[in-house]
Length: 213
Image (cartoon, rainbow, N blue to C red; front, top):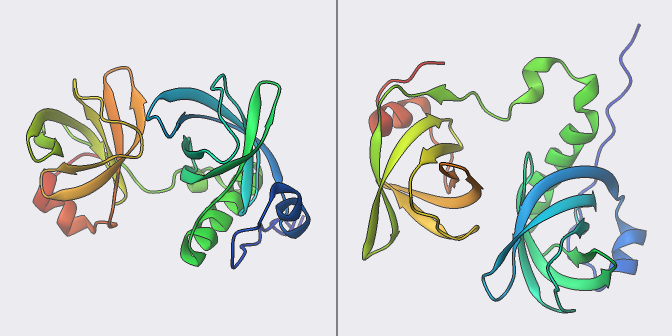
């Protein structure tokens, strides 16, 4: 039997002026993803995404956000989005997504995968192949004066999972050795980071040695 054609989330060239216009212009995907948000005050809160398009998103959160406040949000399988709050409702809020054309195209591709993942082979389930490291320690620099030790548990061409006592804010830029990174998740023993530039296999071996798939 022929597989159904994949559903495609369409990117937009520019950000909409308000949520109502965004809803008319871009298809919204109802999807539940867990993550965290960071307010303009740099306070962090758990959040649950309930729907999203390339132009905006709605989520549940206990944070008492204000209209116009700029929010940075990170969700599993999706990464980071940011933009101003345009509407609040009981238990949550909606925001527009401020992003370049390239970022919107990337977001559209991620949404397309998310809404079709149940119809795709299991091998499509991971964004990039990850390699587990037996023993690898690197210096994590939150700023020029704040070095911390980090144990690198696994890496891929796009990021790494670290065990560390440091808890830099979600969305903050850090240095892992000589690699520029962005903090995308906190976990019980440390953080996950996304590399600012996708690394090749040779680059990973140079920075972290040889791992095991």
